[in-house]
Length: 372
Image (cartoon, rainbow, N blue to C red; front, top):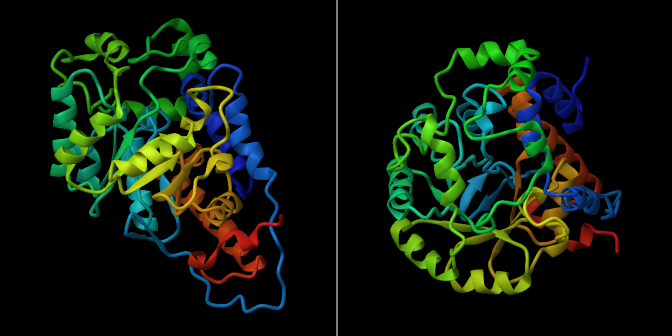
């Protein structure tokens, strides 16, 4: 590949460089993957209005998300196992996001820990929280995020039970990964990935191992993760989490209008309209088709593969967007440089499209750029 011009190019390169079980983990959806596909396809169905003979100079994509200044309305989404796409993946992605001026969101299920990421960044990042049955562990996670000076907490609401992802089952993916002959072959065919992984000691869930009471090593990790996601999580839990955190709170995983109304009542600072990248309820609506209006600051996650997609989401009412797979493709393809390249591709596409729609400021973009 001589030129990388779009996110699809990074995806193709990552597929060749990341072991199949980890690439498929990032690139999979639940069951038939209908919702995963709909997230992308529904963006394609939204048409833009081309405008001419307007001043297109001095453009700016700068705006804010939950009151925090961003160079463009894009954040890196919380993604599990990021450090298995590339050695020290969360740390590299956080550094790329910081240099670009956009938020990085660290997942509870990350390979690198909160403290690892804090050690290589100079500005606050965001932390995504899963609520586990072991409440002491959850409280400790919140306190660790506060100690690391994270500037927002993203509470995920749509993973009380795990949706079935056929690719992961067929690949035999587990936490931690088993080293069967099949898995060793998948890794051996990616020697560059292997060499980088041998150069780091970050190869487990470092937010969990040594922090959760019953997880002292890798051997006890799988049993703990299988039983810890709390199916009884309710709206009442948001209150004590908000009180413990005492900072900006974002609720992730809202897709239904009734849930959006309930979220607004909690006093959260924003919601993320999301179907978990199509990885939970297969057959649900795409994220872009379910943007609510005028209740709370709204962000969107799911299906964004270009700067045009970001612009469409902003035009339809989102204040910010999140990219998961695009930055993971960049990370798997080229490490930190690839994450920067993914962000730059999206920035350039958004900037050019905004100009051709007759706008100079992202803060001026609204439904008037959408062709009805």
